[in-house]
Image (cartoon, rainbow, N blue to C red; front, side, top):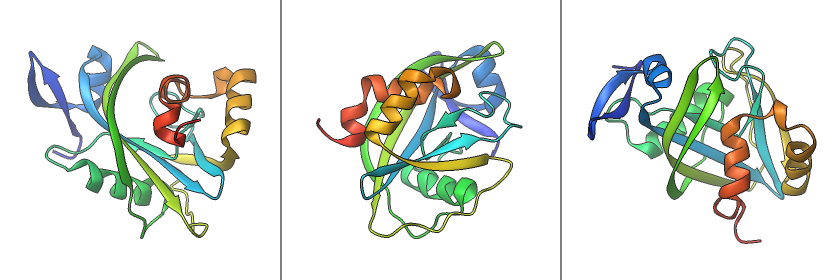
Length: 173
């Protein structure tokens, strides 16, 4: 069931093919991670071959858990699969929900387990080119500035996190 994600149909959690969940705009489970080192957060540019939001900048990593996969395990798995980052333990922050048009008739309607990591040392990063084409470390001020001046280069969910959930990600202002 690796390509099936947990989605709600008529109030019941059901395995659904990932693309179909996005076509139908089904409410489904997701995981997002924000990795910090010193005063900077790691963001990634999605690979050009992604079926939605290709080439757009997003948080450190995000994905959908496999059926029956615990959110923490999913976050750890995805850090490795996308960025080659291992040996870090995410801290669960909260569960949040958003709905966003991601283009091409697709909708993300996610119930997200949000995780943060504060790394003491700069982690070794090995990009998976089918997932990520670039990364950048930015301060919150620099990220806010880029989103304000170039919103079109960012994923809808990163803009939602920064607009509505920044205190959960970065702590109280």
